[in-house]
Length: 319
Picture (cartoon, helix red, strand yellow):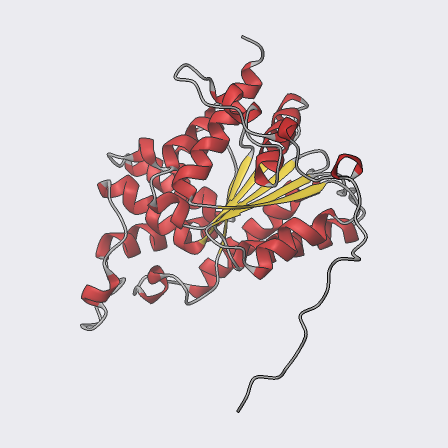
């Protein structure tokens, strides 16, 4: 088959305009500045390119610093991976500095945090043990956490408080690296939001579904109280793709339903990829009537230390 005989299009009559008079979205004034060996974190952030995340990241840092300075809450919702990649010491430091006001975890968060407290390590290799039915059957993990939850149900307290109490009472050797133990020591609320059947401790003989449900529902109500005071504050979602974005949205709607003014606040999502629920339920929908939402994509082990360093440096004020 022969190629069609088509005459190439003639561009000679194209209307043009001057580059000098055209609006451009990128200018050299927005370019990054070279790094120096003695550069502070604050200088590094100030010298990022004024484009995309290079513009949004300093904005979020400033909003967190303003919230802390104005004694408004900075609430942190996070998945367990943040603990697994070793970021607990940084988050504990932010709690001690009065930057983080409260933490919301999923059920896996208490498992990895408690194992860190007990033996200084966590995260089994699932592929090695799943075939023999041994995945999640760690004796101490199931016993300590379920006993704590059962005790918490008897006392009428939340799951996060119950586990924090148990870790401190048993004085585990690595409590200093535990978010729950240190939050309890600092009297900072930790709420735990459980989806039944998703966590290894649910298969343990000591698991009591009624106790788990009671304690987790108590924590949801505590979380709602925290969200009711979020006006002027910040909510950060770190690595929870489904559970905590849904919990946050439900908490926000119930507090608004009951008459609380929660419209002008800041949200941000940090994760490896942009997923539907964090983008929609944390970044977009909650800030439709005020405030601002941000989305940052990257590794927690890089992004969270950078965020913490930038906030701490900003709050330190001029040198």
